[in-house]
Length: 300
Ligand SMILES: Cc1cc2nc3c(=O)[nH]c(=O)nc-3n(C[C@H](O)[C@H](O)[C@H](O)COP(=O)(O)OP(=O)(O)OC[C@H]3O[C@@H](n4cnc5c(N)ncnc54)[C@H](O)[C@@H]3O)c2cc1C
Image (cartoon, rainbow, N blue to C red; front, side, top):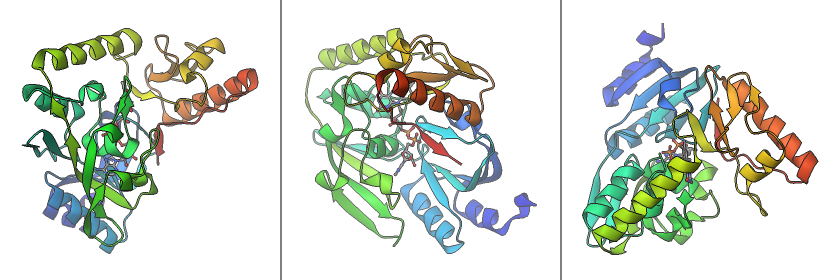
């Protein structure tokens, strides 16, 4: 019985934890089977302790924020899945903000607004956490995390040591960073903002929200843009021009509103989404000679 599992008992000594944890409601795609184990640390220390325990017990541990860029396998996910979104410490340091990995980007932007600090407006509306956004070098409206990040405090999962990475050591590029290697975890990051006016910051945040509402299928479950921006043109435009808008496999559908999104139109499985991704790649490659690269991350 998993509920009597000694590993689970040790997880529970650290924080809230479960065996056979249903993942679908933890991801913005609303897709996923059960995680073998799931844990919900409330502090950076608990997160570090979980990683240490998993290493000692030889259990694979994977860390997520809001799982807004993730496709969990409908067959379930092995090992330990850790969600950081209860690690919420955030503080002002002059005109800078230091935020823990689990802080939602919306909370980060609202603190910046409250203190009339500008530079983070682009991130308002991205439904992720600081850790996920740093990993992905999330961006929108011409801004991205790399433009405002000063440094991150990280856990080296191989050694259990904490270290500070400067901005250049993050090796940021379009929707990627050094964290993709899977060796380091973001515990917290420091962001450099600048003095602005509340009216201007709020106006930008409102403008970006309206743009999202007008162009993205925000009322349906998704994981955002499925593909990275190709070297030339936009993935959504290629997919639309290929005649795939609205195309469906099982419960997975190319969004009618924005062809760069796949939505869960009801009961979609990870297999439906993966099959639709392959179909899109094949058709776009045949019609336009463009190889689309997947941005969302499949986890099994
Ligand atoms: C409707 C919608 C709109 C979106 N719009 C945008 C957009 O405009 N721009 C954009 O860039 N993205 C967008 N996204 C995608 C997504 O929100 C971002 O990539 C976001 O930054 C992911 O953050 P997260 O906390 O959800 O990370 P998750 O999805 O939980 O994880 C993403 C990756 O980061 C890793 N990770 C998470 N936390 C940590 C940590 N503490 N340390 C190390 N690695 C970690 C995970 O292991 C995973 O590999 C959108 C998604 C949706 C659903």
